[in-house]
Amino acid sequence: MAYKVKGKIVVITGATPGIGRATAELFAENGAQVICIARRMAQDFYSIPADITDVSAVKNAVAEIKEKFGRIDVLINNAGMGISGAVEDTEISDAHAIFELNFFGALNMIKEVVPVMRECGGGTIVNISSVAAELAIPFQSFYSATKAALSSLSSALRGELAPFGIKVCAILPGDVKTDFTSSRRKNACDNPAYGDRVTRSVAVMEKDERNGLPPRAIARIAVKLASRKNPPVKVAGGRKYALFLFLNRILPARLVSYILAKMYA
Image (cartoon, rainbow, N blue to C red; front, side):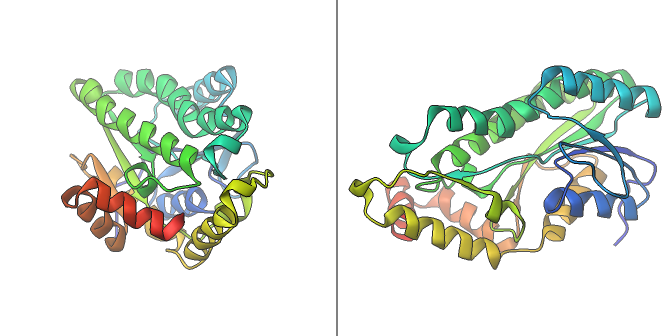
């Protein structure tokens, strides 16, 4: 399938193995100029090594892109991390760290890219959120919270930027088979109050992720959204997860909470 992204300047954060890498490859295959921003250099693409939680690093990266390419047509906010464990046992520093990357890192990029897009007459911002933004997962509370914040930001920002021709949307992937699983930060605390519930919950999550969708499935959604004149506010990452989100909207909240607790807690 051909996508209408040929010649577009596309900036992707966290474009190392996983969803970011697959998205970079698919955009490039369809004729886009891809710029990757990550802590590590992305092979085969124009890369700018930068920590997106560092405001000055983001300013310098976007300034370099503007100077070299003249514009930014698409921003994919993909960089993120996960932590797991009981809320009461999570170090405050770890909670700050996940918000700094998953939410404030995306915000840093948006704040620098929006003026460039506005100056050039428009663009598309795609934020990689999660199904966990709407179906908050026990023992993965802070990840769910960061993605809920990112989804809300996306919805509000869409209305703010519409007059400038800048479209904002969010993708809510479910389980995807990537290095995210092995890099998840786990609480070291072994709180006897929870017994083996944390361990069992994380095991369920990791099994589902290892059997999840390939990253390219999410990449196809991202490229399709960037091709559309009026993309939807949010899109589930796969039909199964679209069903889950639909059921979440129509079922009583207490029932949904009970089901998630049975699955993960």
